[in-house]
Image (cartoon, rainbow, N blue to C red; front, side, top):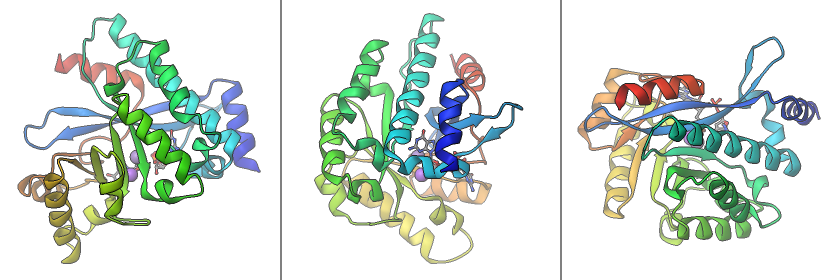
Length: 256
Ligand code: G
Ligand code: G
Ligand code: MN
Ligand code: NA
């Protein structure tokens, strides 16, 4: 498969890089954290997004290598910031696909990487979708999520409202945060259903003690609606697209 080969070469020549998209608190406009989104830097410097190599996320070996590399780079960036005097705290979300959980040692490898660089578990949030929770690695995912949560790693349910939406996930898994899928955000001001669904999700999440991040926020109308109904935080092109580590570093310096 082409994607697998592309990823293999990118790993071998260190051209896999995490980009960071800011997540902003709606109450006060302050930085809440970032989501790490992997890119492949082409030999020509062009950036390739995950859609272009999405098949690799379904291949167990490639998925595992991508996950390990991304976490390695994210933790090394955090260690670099700390060496420069940044004291934190900060929360960086990392994504994981179902195939990464094959083998049953996901949590162990994840925690080993944090320990290797002395990164507090609360600084790295694991983002999994409902599809991952319910997929072919469901048992391994459950065990990993429970072990990581126990160790203090925050867990986010990503793309919430799509996939195998079932409220039982909120009951049966140690979830800290839901990320409302951008398809609902896109419906704000355009149809009646999405705003009603978002309101209901926020009330539900807050009653369960979960925080809510809205994804794909692009317009002022969307932002103001989300702020007005008490959504905790948001990410999207309205604030910033994902950028390189240098962007993250200069944003944190400005904030300090
Ligand atoms: O920018 P965007 O094109 O970055 O990301 C597209 C999709 O790829 C998103 O659904 C995101 O969850 C997924 N993705 C981005 N980075 C990673 C990663 O490091 N690991 C996994 N498993 N998925 C990722
Ligand atoms: O993990 P996840 O599926 O949520 O990844 C986020 C994806 O959404 C990435 O591909 C990212 O580049 C993309 N994205 C981020 N902000 C926006 C936005 O405001 N609008 C749209 N359409 N896509 C966005
Ligand atoms: Mn995500
Ligand atoms: Na998402």
